[in-house]
Image (cartoon, rainbow, N blue to C red):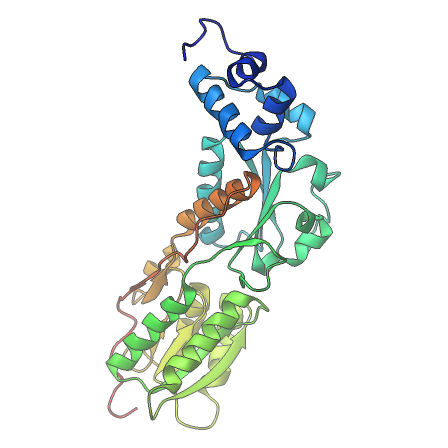
Length: 339
């Protein structure tokens, strides 16, 4: 099919495909289902490709009420992890002519109840962390095309989900500590009601329970160095045998555990081993450097945006959890015989 020397129009596509301009508009606007046949839709798309037709996005957005804007809802911007998620999502969005608006919601619904006069009118879709899911109701984001990050696939408002393989990360931590000989473990758990932290607790308990002679104690703390310090100090001074390893849900919690151990006159890893999860810059800033699980935040954001694009186009998003990797550093060692 020869291409015209001038920019092709929707009328040219209609003539080439043997359909009406209205049918072209429906197909290229992804509103054809139930109105034209799949065969017709494929014929229109093929004609558009052959002609090199590109719709006028500005005019199309006005007609369809689309702004090619996505909202990324995260719990907070207190670590570089969510900055990485944003970077990955924004990179993929830009490749497809979308922009990403970041909405940090540290207290669930956050300080601003609605970042837009009408979220539904101003947005094409939402990507949201399960840790900030409460914000969706406030901005009516649960009524838009939605992708949930770090969320239970069976209970995510019917939305598509994108997850890191957190369960495998925790299994890698447990196997590493068990292989070193640790049998008494303190789980410093994030005091956040979120599926991702439930997975960590469940997998750690299951893996340790499978090895005879192990014991696990749990202490909960807000995700802050001060909160982790207080919770760790309380747990390690409680009656009973002292744990030989502390498994932390987050690298920031691990930094707080370090401070508590030093305050108690204990050394890492000579007296107590410590592990984290995230592999933030903090992990190599503390001494000894932290054994932790590396999460690829940018890939996480990329996959989240690709999943939302698939939802917007009526396609099935890519399946499978994103692999994670245990990075062994100086904070873990075999327990001392005297412990």
